[in-house]
View 1 (tube, rainbow, N blue to C red):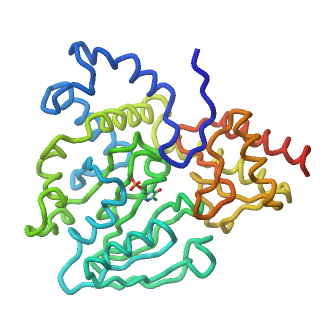
View 2 (cartoon, protein in one colour):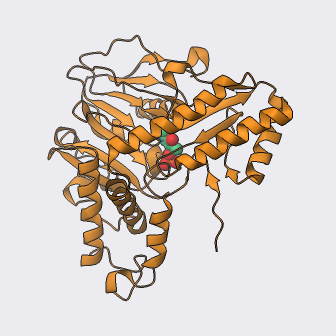
View 3 (tube, rainbow, N blue to C red):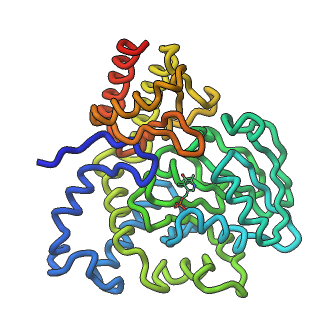
Length: 361
Ligand SMILES: *Cc1c(COP(=O)(O)O)cnc(C)c1O
């Protein structure tokens, strides 16, 4: 019998066990085809059903109306950093960005490389990206406002999206898609590398509204144009079939086992509150993000005595709590508690953290 740990890795990250079991059970002979999903033509009825179901479930979970396309790309969220300005900029209009660190910073860089007029209208760089900026003005003339809904590395999250008037919001939602309830209406586009909260590495979800697809210029390469994916239902060329299949199973699990996004979001909040309460209770631990900006997905913290951090991480690993090391760029500790990380995993971590204080405090 295989031994599974509680996997707190930031990405690629833990997947729901029932999804893994389903993949295993139907791997050799997919739905009576006599082939595995890895071997099937993307033009076959078997794959077409998978793709259609992934799209339908994604739209239902995120309450997307008919104006929205669900696209599956390759190249990760990082590819969207360049494709978004390439496709969605408008002649003579600025691009507004908010810089909450790492991923936003990279997105800004990719827009500037292309010579776009980028205005960083707010940034939390002054305090090492430990908070979500509150005061800023969106240029009503901007082609879009780009932000990162959840900073996976710094452990910060937008809990309320800014009111941008008529300016469409564009968001990198790599680490909190499907984790929360939000109104999609202000969004012209959002995207997510699947490997955090939606599936495996190798597939990227892009949700885009009709009017944004219409912006895509003709004179850019076919594979870098969102309209190619929208007009061909992500099948202009061979799509990342296996990744799409896993996303389909994850969305099915969200709907049928977890009861939809509202229930999932409530559970995520409960998990996060449990962990932050433990961090705040003990002087031994220090949360790194401002209280009102704390992420419900990536809980970042330090030990008051940083010399104890490597001991903390290695003893946790030995206790079956894996992946608690902070990102190499910031150090410290990080518990990624995505949808698939069960409440029992957070409870086990909290118990471990209390015990660790008792023996090392
Ligand atoms: C992981 C991550 C990325 C990078 O994703 P890739 O798919 O590796 O390009 C971008 N943005 C956020 C918020 C992330 O968490």
